[in-house]
Image (tube, rainbow, N blue to C red; front, side):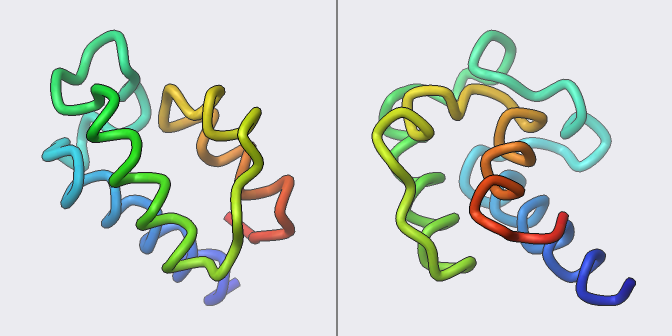
Length: 82
């Protein structure tokens, strides 16, 4: 269970730091409601996710990484427990 929280916390920390999202708003965060989640923000977020979780996202996953929830599903696809 501890690993689960660690990965979830790492993911949450990435979003709050890179996209300047308040933790209370994470569950609903998306490109539609977060101004910092633009093309540059997404590239920074992808780079952060790849570095923190030691994975390389496929192009399709990068294109679909448009919300907090989608990011969780993408991490699960790569075997990351979140």
